[in-house]
Image (tube, rainbow, N blue to C red; front, side, top):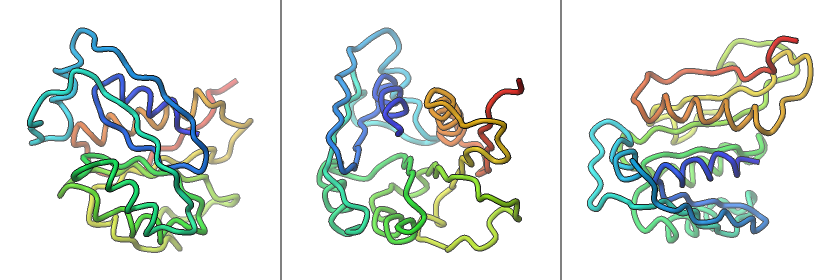
Length: 183
């Protein structure tokens, strides 16, 4: 569901690890003007050892019901700490998966969590389980709160990327509603 986000991050010079049940390749992104500069502008204080000339996406097979195996595969593919996490995990697996992958994040690395809006309004954060991810600045993208229609894939990608850009820029953690534009 977030392939467009992975493509955009790879185009910006990020190395992206995609845990998923199904293999869905994302083509390599050729180097272009400004790619190395954008790669150097990750989170505040980040200094890459070698500026990336091009980003890449690496798929790892994952099963949400086996979070330790998912985290081990992602950690092997990363080869180090992650500077950003973008996660859209089914609520039934959310806490276990986020607890398993949180140790893969670099200290202070931001996270962007995508969640579906609950069917009825409630107070932000009410009833949400805590996770190890709470030690990081977490930006939450809430999809479809009181929608007039279903969100398109492009609208979801645009909303998630907007939150990613804010998170990487060091903006304070926040919740962002992604809704269809008014008719």
